[in-house]
Length: 151
Image 1: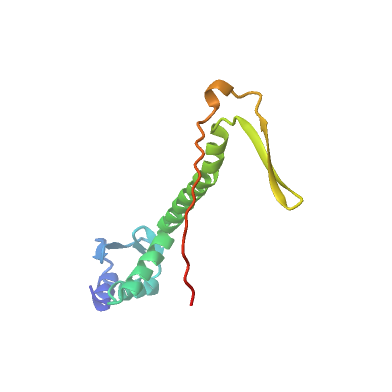
Image 2: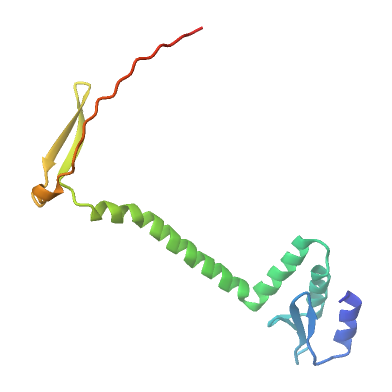
């Protein structure tokens, strides 16, 4: 569909809608052109036809965004994306908190530096079931001998 074809369609005042690149153009009773439900004046609709028929995909996408903005679809898409983003941020930010509070602690530990040496202090949790909450601890000494050559 060329601009000239669109101009002929507009001048004929046809009540039949016109399909251009997946978008529906229809004349309204007040002389406006409705594109996918959004109202445009003749000059804007003519420019949309030129943009939709462009070889540039960026220009075609720009025309589609203008149509979406005018008929309200873009607002809906943006709000839906914001809700999805807010939900993702909430889930990601609360995940470590949920894990930290769900784990039973058998002791509360803190660290401090005394005379240049780090000292860990642990106090047993009085609410912990000591017989079943004690994890198995295996201490392994690792060591190795190496030879370094420098040049």
